Image (cartoon, rainbow, N blue to C red; front, side, top):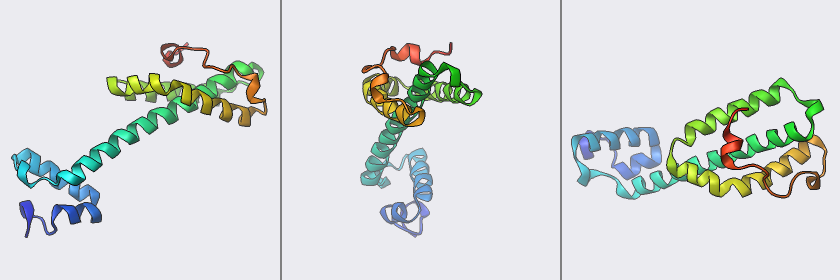
Length: 147
């Protein structure tokens, strides 16, 4: 046996079974065995988690904006499905944006998300991208609020 009763060294465990590695890292931290931690992979894992969370915010914000654009540009085609997607994305973003870091990221990513949303809405509606406002017409706080 190796570190903390494990069959594999932590770096090897990371490569073979990330969940088992996470559990082992958690046990080591709880036991105060900081010197046994796999710091190289821990740093990589934490950075990956932060990037994943930021990508999720961008993706959800893009989806929300695309549906809001369709809602505004084609009121005659509004569906309950669009309304449900808008409500769901707002709820999911509210949960993510409890993190002040992710809230700041959302504000910074708004122009990028809006550009992507215009492309998506144009494809889905058949309207030209030029029929949508060039810049996001709403503040982040307004976008996130249920009406």
